[in-house]
Length: 370
Length: 246
Image (tube, rainbow over all chains, first blue to last red; front, side, top):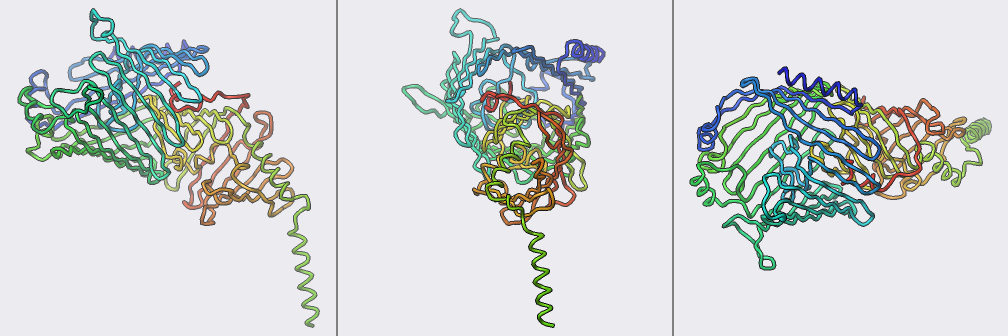
């Protein structure tokens, strides 16, 4: 705890001394888990101590500075786990950017979230979400050099990412690269992208269209490295797996909104394939099948009580999760959030029972912003 | 006796009509020119500003945000939240009929419906961009009270936020003092008061605005213009959704 405090104090004083733009967030988190003793639980329990009640303290630090055309951005989070008295940290982003008119280059660890949908982003192969129920939370950036140039015709982007998991003798295998073009047409954003990966290229397209009544989000991607045995399509003699999302968002009033998404992934497992995986590995991975439906409703009452209900339904086997949450935002500089992740899967559906090691998770968060 | 009553009635009607009559200079052309002047008196063509917006809704906690804003013309603006700390760094971009929000945590633009209100306030997104009244409304002067005249704006097209706007303004300063907004049904839905006239960005402008919600009693949004600076130009990439992370 002392080290965490010293680090935070150092950052605060450094920000003052160097005139950085500083943001500090602090969180106390308490999580109670009602475990389900299944194969997924056994796999976790074999490698670490499992406790029903866990807690952590989190401090997040954001620093920004601009000198002429050069900007610096730093975003890191540190966790203190009181039960084990361990401290860990993650640097989410640390990069410089250089701007020259419509041209801008970013170099360093940076977030690059692609796609237009909320839950399932088939085109988001560079920066996939860690937690499908909290897709905007704790995204650790990737090391890359990125260049963008805005013009009247379109906005192209090029990214080069060195592979950080060791080097090979073949230079072509030591990096990934990506290109994307953005164009605004009327009230529709259109993105086309291509990702070079030595293990298999992928290409995708995404759109977000304000129809006036609601916003429609579409995404689709083809992957040239399909898992063995999955449904594929043949293009020019090459086999591709495909994934697509269609979603709508609608603001009902200033207080209420709703959105729903359907996701289809041909690289996902069939029920038979899933059973084989569980047999081979001893446990299964959540959200590894073909068809999912996600939906969310949110309502803010009295400007201070935020209610939301997020649901996820596996159409292949009936796997169902519900994630209701209530947050009290009395003051704009702190909030208290109570949430419940409930595994509603019926007994006998393999994904819900073999890949999810709990019946429910109840979480209390106290957040403060400085 | 009958003749006397008729004469008295005619006399009263004559005086009433005289009182209601507008100055001869208040022609249709004068009203249209005035509308252009009002547009300019409120917003420079290109500018940056800092505003504090506080929304109060009946029986609820007030919400307050501070924004740094870059605006160009009638339909392009980029607003960055600088306070409170919870929302710092979020950005809202309006470009024509398009609206996006940018959150630093996910580093991508999220498209919003352009028809929704601005940040839950009484203002619509159209209210907060430069007015653009000249393009969207035809003007006529329909009343006069001393130096104050009533400029009535009627929508030229169907896709604007209001069917009619009644604008009371001072004919000497050309600055509006009070505006009433009417929906398509003809019902008054909002009322805007402008006050605290100060020299800002070179000319006299209202610094304080208060928009009353006439549908939801007791609800209003206050906007205070902290600073404003007219700019020569702003590059187009400022209003590109993919550049919101800059």
